[in-house]
Length: 184
Image (cartoon, rainbow, N blue to C red; front, side, top):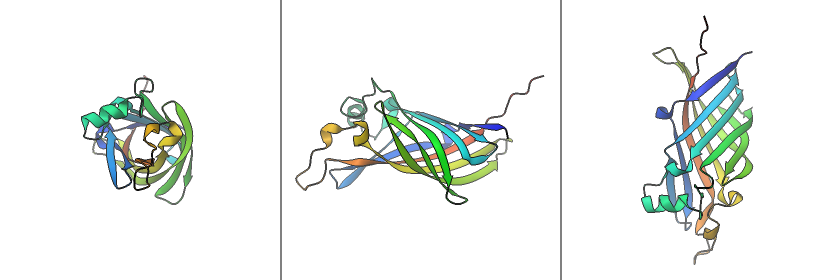
């Protein structure tokens, strides 16, 4: 079977995160600049090899002061570690629409194995003859595993952490099958 390459359609994709603040509310944000590539054997999702990265400098929580703080050494240290990455290692089929994607997540130069839930939205031909596939990806990343926000592990007066350890991540991703160039 031949290898099929897929490119992310950034105009129809998004990457979000949410973390507990003082254990009473959530702070949400997203990355403005990110990319992913996928290779499959034919169109078999379970054979997918996914490579994703997001530019730390593109982080946005709709608060410039907080965004600048997140980019500095207290959190992501964007100068030393400009990208976070995920590289898949395997995909398990749960049912026709649900999969478990295992892989290595790297943030602040620290790599850890994680599992993400994948919901397959389907595959269609668009009006221009391109094959498109859509996915929703969700999961959790423990910020402490990656040395993010270590100065914010203090306990508040109410007994909760100032900043939750788990970062909930979610992405909606649309991919376009890359057409192979025809040689004459």
